[in-house]
Image (tube, rainbow, N blue to C red; front, side):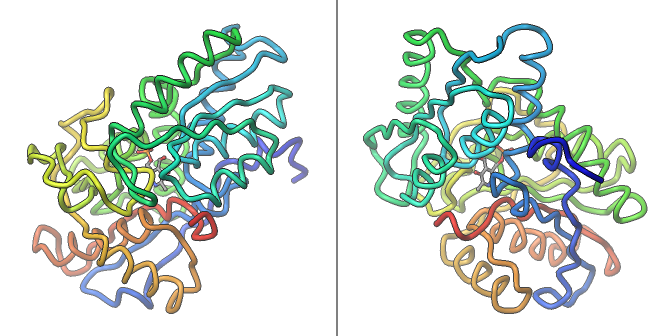
Length: 308
Ligand SMILES: Cc1ncc(COP(=O)(O)O)c(C=O)c1O
């Protein structure tokens, strides 16, 4: 098939059995989202939000697009904006890795770095993200741009409910027993959980967060700083649906480091921290006794390790 643009190759990622890093009981299968053109799972939300806004007239031809990003949403938007002919301005906390700003600039985006409020380099907090979001809002107003607002845009969830979830079911060949995903905006977790629970209401859905910042589990935020960039902002995201979460799994920085290294060495999959946290959490879910010994748990390899 000839793809008409980079937008058309967003979606349809391979589903991989992680049988070398995890040998049982049960099995972990993972969507290779790092293969998408922007290098992460966020390409799906970026595509869905921009296409919907163009369709209903909120985003006019040539209009600037503005968003706050930890890097990945920005890259997805940059891919879509290049293909659709929109200039892109992104604000990003200075705590995110410099590799992200470089990639965004390489894709033609204007990057505005925002000083950290209480985080440190490599460790971005909810306050850091809020500061970047406020700056993005102000820029969108000043430039008459379209503010993407990934935390509140409903199309982000719909993108995963209509693509990622059904892809897992089709590629695996039926319902799965478990679903595990790290939560940033929550679009991936919520959208896929809806699709998987529709196919099998018994699918156990586990939300992944930093060990010491899991408000989704009703726990106080003990330490807002962690290495899982792109997730775990210490707040419950606006369109969170608690009825979809069967359990919450906390992952430490050390665990994410170790699983990231092992995924690269044993599976040949060089991915980021949240992807490693997801796979570690899938193994914990299988070890928890909630599932049978032949259970299959699906997750996502959120982004490439080249961004860190
Ligand atoms: C590296 C990484 N992993 C996971 C996520 C979480 O995705 P979602 O916003 O759909 O919860 C993000 C979101 O930006 C991310 O950048």
